[in-house]
Length: 140
Image 1 (cartoon, rainbow, N blue to C red):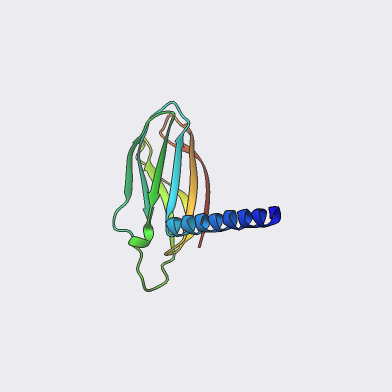
Image 2: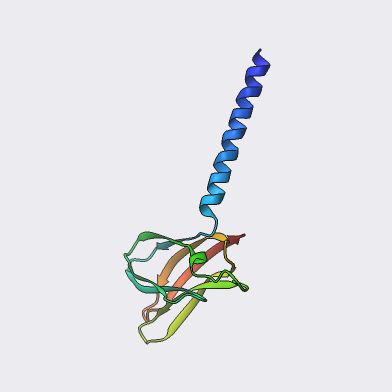
């Protein structure tokens, strides 16, 4: 009797975990999540996220000092159904001298891929050049 109860409990837990993993997989399919941590004492303005085959840049107008921002993109909504669908995402900004800078966020993804990026803004130089630490992971 005790063995039967343990076996049933194990199966219920296993079934629950299966549903949970399936739900999370379906919910996150095709979603790129980006977490930005501004570790500096300065507000950061006008960061642009761009990916190919997208009509408009996604502009972040400001990130306050010592703050956190989370973004969720669903690029599959703008990628073509037919064709390769190969893509990349990068962050760009302009320094105080008017020079444009670009940082790769996701080097490669396709329609339906999902991933996460962690961006730490560690320093802002006097000329407006921003130092980043970027870690990203994409899966299909």
